Length: 236
Image (cartoon, rainbow, N blue to C red; front, side, top):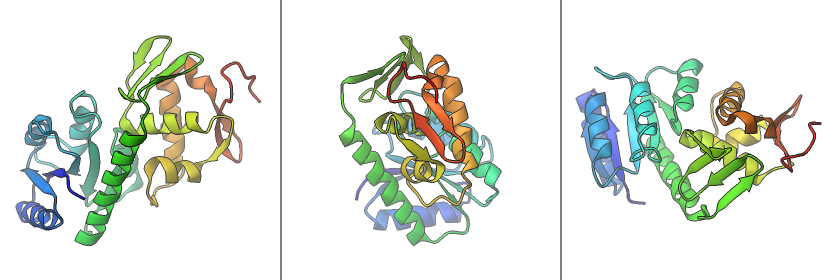
């Protein structure tokens, strides 16, 4: 599977090793050793399909780089796989909150990394193919899947790629209970070594962002969550 990958890593030996290994896998690569350079290269045409982003950089943190990529229309849909030597859960949670799609802790094998990249690219392309160009309206909520936009009462709401995927997953399964484990598997798309509290964090953030439409997502004690089957459905 081909694609353009931007590698952001300040350890030059590791940077060159990753570039060489990925080129052998058939990928094109760009390289950056600082956060500012990464943002500039990410905005250049053609934009990368995926960014391998080290968390610890000499100028901007990987978290800040990811945040800026997600706030720019040119790079918002770009897949982000974070690389870091820090494996604490809080780092993973923060990474996912700002829009990272996956997270690999150093040291890692090149084969594991290649499998993660392949899975992310496959998932991203599948989602693009499955997106319908028409708008879906559910009460006060409107989703334009083709444009990757969400509106509440005609006002656009800015969501990260992961939050958008969480919302569309809920909507596609409206009226059905969803366990936290099922949401982790579907939305994150990996066998995540993070706790289900991550799901709660993202659902809370999603509810806050969509405001008046947040009540469509119900909490089912002891189970997980459920998106209402109808906008006017009474809370259970």
